[in-house]
Image (cartoon, rainbow, N blue to C red):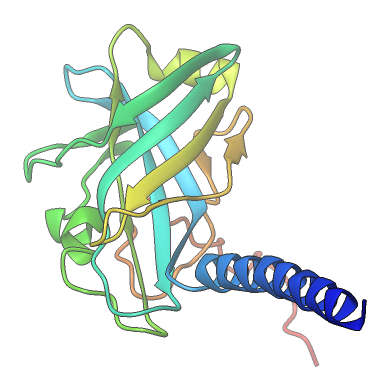
Length: 202
């Protein structure tokens, strides 16, 4: 009887330990590796081209050095869900048509270029991605509102995703947000011109 109880206790211990170890490994794996976030994004149109969305994406690495690649996105425009959109390459001659005039992003600032070199453990890279939409205009995107989640893979093929980012009625969400290490042609600095007649603070 004692042997049976001991054997039963041992089996119970193995089952509990196995479940704990499986959960521990799952949590450890989840906490390591790459992480992505979208601090800001904008949308507009190319010259004589379709509407586009250009999110700025940051990828940090808490695991072994790895590249990031195969960038795709799930995008919701109003009530229309586009489940899988592949990112497009940016040609050096591309210009974005905005109300204040044409703006260009340097190809070297694209995320797929920056993340093609392994990201070291404890490091991060930030760059732009580009997604085109036939049949849509920038005004329609502005009116409907946009929600975007970006997906990407590490060198082993593991898939990651950013938290969804939603912009409602803004043509350049986070346009005044400065991100270190990024050349941001859309950045709008607050007007620091002094008001005529205003006295400086004491």
